[in-house]
Amino acid sequence: SAASDVYKRQLYTASDTVIGRINLTTKAVDTLPLSGSISGARSLYFDGNSTLYIGARRDLYKVDLSNGAVQSVYYSGANPYFTGITKVNNKLYLTGLSYSIYTYDIAVNTMSSVSRPTGTAYGSLVYLGDKLYTTIGANLNSYDIGTNAWTIIRQVKKSSCANGGDMELYNQRITYIGFTDVNDATCVSPEHGWSLYSIKP
Image 1 (cartoon, rainbow, N blue to C red):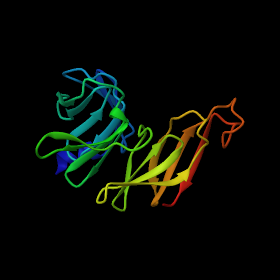
Image 2 (cartoon, rainbow, N blue to C red):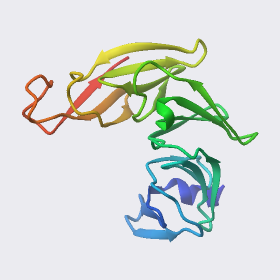
Image 3 (cartoon, rainbow, N blue to C red):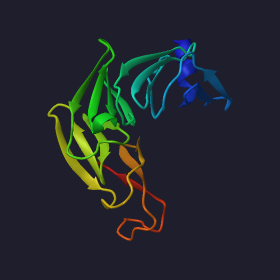
């Protein structure tokens, strides 16, 4: 619809009190005040219509982009943050909380923990070819939704390097930006504060 096309032309950021918006056509920048507060926004997923899902410190929030109304659709009461969100069919997949993979079923409004891998699943999350990709400790890993199996794809930095980073898909490749410890000679690129990796799974 014409209304949803307006939302699709925006780039979104989130804080505890406002949604930041950049219009990709006009380059105009503005904010949408939230009628409700968000605690520790960390990850975003836009549904393609008028809803923005926000993974935060303890909650998964849903924001109506037409009026800024905020609804907590899941409260965990625990840390750490939801650090990655992506959608597969009618479910949102999330990483971060309790170092597990969670699903939020949009149709029935329920959250479930589907996998707790060995190691710390606490990074961004991308979906490609029926598999989810995320970082666990120092490695890039894939999670097969159908078989509930984890596979190490590539070691992107030494285990002694600082964790952190972000991932995105580009031309069917996964690009990973990882922070490294500039004082640790065992890091892949110790001369830099961060390194960029790009692989084709």
